[in-house]
Image (cartoon, rainbow, N blue to C red):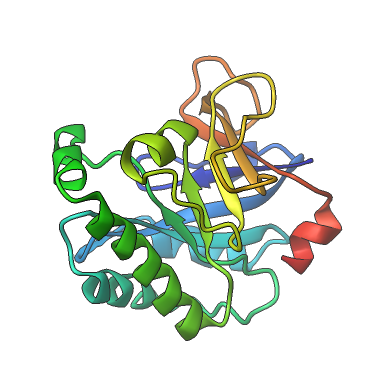
Length: 207
C-alpha cells in the first residue's frame, strides 16, 4: 500500500517534516455552497512544485444546493487533466455540527440524490471519476446502504486492520486509518489524518 495524508486549514503543515513514505496529499478545497478553505491555495501551490501526487476534495453540506456546491468546488481552478493530479474526492459524512444530521434523516432520499447529482455533475465537468469518502456506519445510517460501486471508495476506519466494506463494494481504494498522525508518520499525539492507497505507486499514478 501507498501512504498519504489529507489536510485542511485545521492543520499546520511543516513540509520539511513530511515522511518520505508519504506519496500523496489530498487537500480540502471547499465545503457547502460558500466555504473556501483558506489554506488550499498555499498547499496546492507547494505541491505543484514537488513529486507528490495531489488531490482536492469537497465536504458535502446536506442543506445546500448541489449546483452551488459544485460551482464552489470548481471555482478553485484545479485542472484535473494535469499529470500528478488525483481524482476529485467528495467527503460525505457527519454534518458540522453533528446535530445537523437531522437534516439528512428527515429526507434520506433527497440526500442520496444530492450525493449522486454532485458526483454526476463533477464527473461531467472534470472528465474524472469522483472518489467517495465516508465510513461504513454512515452508509448504513444515512445513505440506506446505497452504493456508488463504480466510484473509488475511501473509508475512514481508525483501526490497525483493513476496514470492512459497506454494502455494494468489493474493495476500498483509500483507507483513512488514523486521525492522530504526525507528518513523520507516527500515531501518537498528532493531528494529521493518515491514509493508505490500496495498491502500488504505479497504479495510484494511473488513477
